[in-house]
Image (cartoon, rainbow, N blue to C red; front, side, top):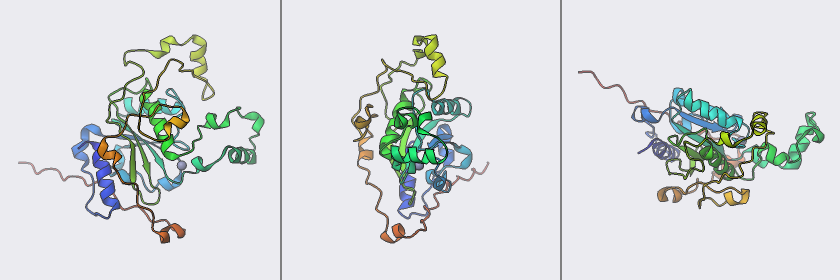
Length: 280
Ligand SMILES: [Zn+2]
């Protein structure tokens, strides 16, 4: 069983009430630490890294509003690349969450909120939605982010890129994109896409998120998984393994807990460290 297979298995057992569910990090020494990109939502503070069942020291946590990746060379992509190269991250997980307020904010509402804090429409780019990477569903956003990360020349093919959505009320994980599946790489590993850029384009790329880097000839992998990715004009990632496709959706919350302002905490999914073997 590979790391995220074990994580999902332990998470689902813990959510179902199995108090003995947990991970033995020592068994996955070659697959840790994990790099996770999540939303900034403070409700996630209490969930991670417990819902993954991995120790804090093996958890590299990147956050931005909506766990959005805006491009294969974006600032977040650069941090992910450095987290792999400098901090030794072995696997990447892009983890969205249910009830994401970024997802629920319409363009008009966003403009109103920005105006309320002194940012006038005239100072913003024309396509505000695209600029901020706003999205319609959490799953769709995770699939899009995984597609960018997997297609990025900054992430080597040895690094699996997973996509998950965590239920913010129960802590249950849904595995949306299985990073262990092979993806056809749009850019051959030895190919340097920067060599194709003009000097001007390279400078523009470094200018920040406004830099419109045109991957005209870049093709995303064709896929069949998700219902949503076609709506956003991106090819979808490779389908999950069959057993994962068959994964049941998270159980609905009990009516009482939905009504209650108090959220039930997820079960304490804690890593269980295997005690060191006695020396002979
Ligand atoms: Zn969020």
